Length: 66
Image (cartoon, rainbow, N blue to C red):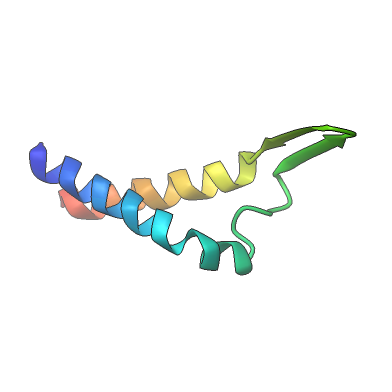
């Protein structure tokens, strides 16, 4: 269990470090992401990005557990 938590922490840290470059390739601005701007108010709901990240993490954890 502790090994899994360490791996998850490292993956999250790696994503955090790579986020500026991931934004350049389109992650964070996918077609299913909702962005609403009204004057001084902005709402951003990264639905498609969340699904993609969830699928990648699920696949990664599935591979680690095997």
